Image (cartoon, rainbow, N blue to C red; front, side, top):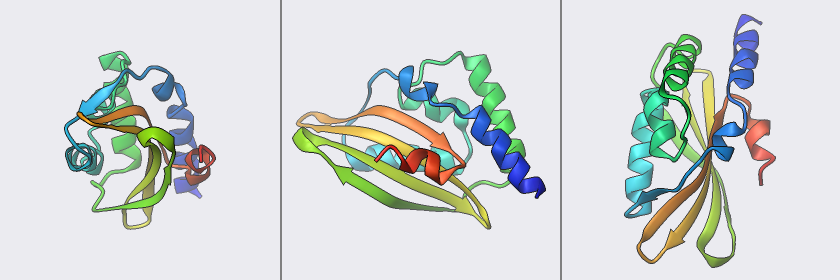
Length: 137
């Protein structure tokens, strides 16, 4: 029950404004994007992953968020899997990616645009509540 309460707190700490504050985050290709994402999320480097995917939040706020995430998730994530992908027209797509260790999960939502010169992350959000991000599809 205590874990459920902690996860509920995390959900409250991770609102949708991460998407609203995004600027474009450009990568040469999908493999480069995923390598960066997977490394940062697995290591719980929230203060670094959010700016790497276009979030322009205050660095002090990101550091505080990272500390709260590290309290709730005391171990680095060991596993990652793409659990949902939706291809749209003109190179746009959505992805939902799960990261986990033991029985603790966190989910990442991406809105991407494949272009001739690379790939752009247009939207990024993460949450401990699967349903919260799954409803974006």
